[in-house]
Image (tube, rainbow, N blue to C red):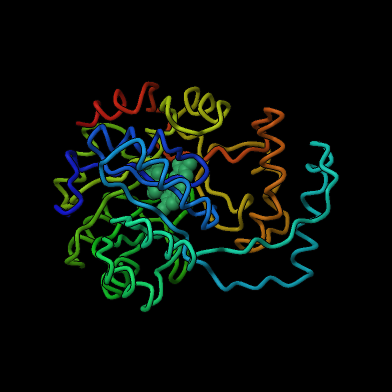
Length: 332
Ligand SMILES: Cc1cc2nc3c(=O)[nH]c(=O)nc-3n(C[C@H](O)[C@H](O)[C@H](O)COP(=O)(O)O)c2cc1C
């Protein structure tokens, strides 16, 4: 991983919807590898974001993309999932029609990365096809996959990723799972299994909240760690102020796994939305994400944490405030 020129073995987790150009650049300037969470962005917005980061730092940074999925939901599932959301839409005063399925711009984003001379690209929710990998490698892009099991780490290696992030069950946000049954393996065990199985560099992610945990991951064979939750409350982070407050006032054991917001399993601080959606129909990803988009947006505008996705990892209660530089200093 020497080609990434990182001063510290730390990757700022790509966090779609939360990373701002100032945040990514501050992480890069502080010696970590900054990452743009471009998963929800259009190709044009991805280009704009890359240019904004470049205007703030000359250090390398990565762009993270969501590998699109070919799931098709049937109309009955969608109607049931939408109906289950109606009482909450009503409570928030949302009157618009049922949202349409969003279209991913993955191939165009890949083209933008090449045109903008981005040197590191990471993926979650799957691995890109052979042609895409070939195209990016031809353009000297360093490729990082995400795995939540040893099998997925092996698939990342087989598909010729340069490195792989192994995401333990403690991790905040969405599980990057893409193969077989959803498995929840804590980071320590998963890391040892992956380091013993693959030859490509392994990056440890999930619940890393201080230097002791970072050192433990490195001694277990990780070449770097990826940190999300600990950086979410940084001054430069684009997380909603209510999200930041929920993190700073959190307790041990306050997070849970849910599919309610997007149709894909993710870890966040438990709230009313997660509890009320427990026994209702949930549409598959990305349909559920489209169906709940307005709820999340309106809840954020109205300041109602009950209906916001408060993504956070299991060690959220160890988070402290500060600038990116101050927070990262505690890991170095
Ligand atoms: C708010 C939030 C958003 C996230 N978004 C992404 C994303 O867009 N792409 C991705 O690969 N991982 C994403 N993740 C997962 C992180 O990459 C990483 O696995 C996780 O943050 C590590 O666990 P930690 O939060 O306990 O440090 C996100 C995590 C959080 C907390």
